[in-house]
Length: 472
Ligand code: UDP
Image (tube, rainbow, N blue to C red):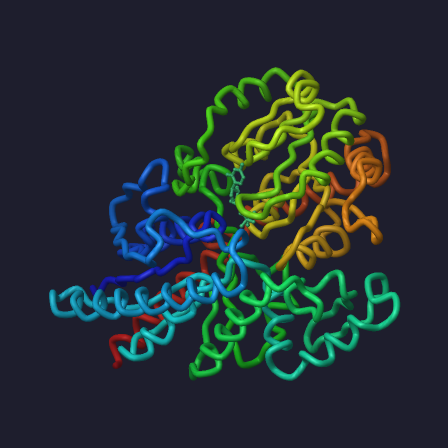
């Protein structure tokens, strides 16, 4: 019996390594071998290097072995970084593919996450099947696909129209939803901050790579019931939902010890005790606040969040990654729990957590869905504004904060209003989002269990690619 040997190339970021490791675990459970190619920096930052039978980790230098901060540098810095990553990464991956073949262990398929689209080009050079592991929703994939296939001017013109932020006038083929300018990925819009143009260029290259494929295949961290229309919206691309990519303990429970992705990066923290702290709180009483692993909030915005949390008079667990002291830090520490990092899936699955104030990163969104936790959607950039729309208007599992248009921030009063709406136990909206949360939690688990649609899709993909490799 021929065994699949996957090469999985990922961009060095927490939001990429988590779903990628989960994907690797699925492949391994289906008797494949996985080689994970990551940068030296990412590997050095992993708290517990995963040691999973069937998984090999190989590292390469992107020229920044002590790290590179895409947001802190300017656009030009990022472009230089991206071209080095591509040059060094492509050479490394090409050498690895040929040396593995020479040693009698040829790869059967190359998969890769966002921002390392060059991996697809390398795979094509070796006539190897490849698939993009898309770690955002299918809806965002579809919006971007259309943007790069003739709808760029349309989206830009619509976003310039008067009241663009509140009128739902952007209609795209195959998507049943109408979008306002504040709901499409922010880097698409004219007037974006210059540091966002690197994302636009990367995505453009990604879609050009897919265009060069005869059967472009995208494995998606979503599930059929969640995004049925979007998954069928682009005829030319084979979108295969295989999610949610979340540790087994929180899904089918088949592997109760699998409680973490295994890819946590060092966060310079001494945050123990938050689970015991949660244990001491009443059921569904805690407001959990986190803005992911990456994007920095302004000090002013953090002050507004702090005010809202203190005014709500509910217990809160707040992840603040950077050191910056806020004016009411002492009071915050007295009334709630402040940490620099936590195991988010463990927190979200804790019975004390009543709502999640989130930046709506796609991993965080899937994690709240799987754990059935009501959401206060507080999107910042990239795909997060689209994700927030899905949360509020489609799945109806939360409410979205509204920015103060003049100041460009969300006021403490607005944050408090949203938290109270989802936390008020007898409120109609709170009941609705909890009901829907329970519904989606069950559907997410059904999708990924053995014999469920995501599991079946992944098995079919494995069989099809293995066949194509053998016929070559
Ligand atoms: N995460 C975590 N602890 C934290 C903050 C984030 O474990 O304190 C994890 C979270 O569970 C998720 C990932 O980091 O899997 C963040 O990915 P997401 O797509 O939500 O946002 P990003 O960090 O990419 O903006």
